[in-house]
Length: 112
Image 1 (cartoon, rainbow, N blue to C red):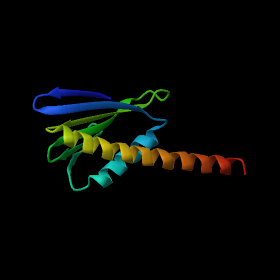
Image 2: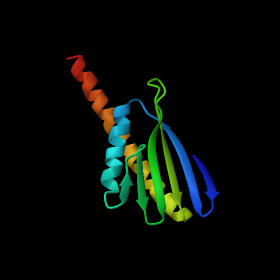
Image 3: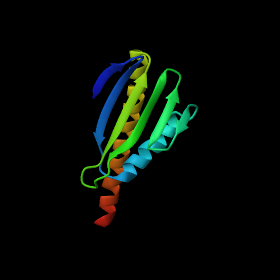
Image 4: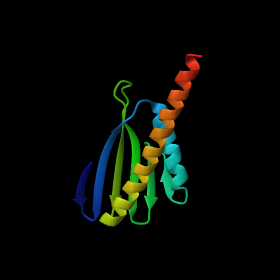
């Protein structure tokens, strides 16, 4: 995670490795559900505008063997950056757990 200050915004950029594009699509879908009252753009990934700034999530690497997403948060206050970062991280962790369980269940069905 990289934190910087680019007046008048605090900027946090983070990269997360993912296993497949389906995870990215589901992550974006869950973020849209969590921030459904905010203005959103879906031109290059997902950009969500909230009262003190915005965040974006996009597929950073499109190489199937090395997929990653870029999460960038821009906010006028450091407190707001931390709050949004925490919400995004919570969604990411929950989705990883769901994907792990789903993968394990699917693998069990393959062997039956």
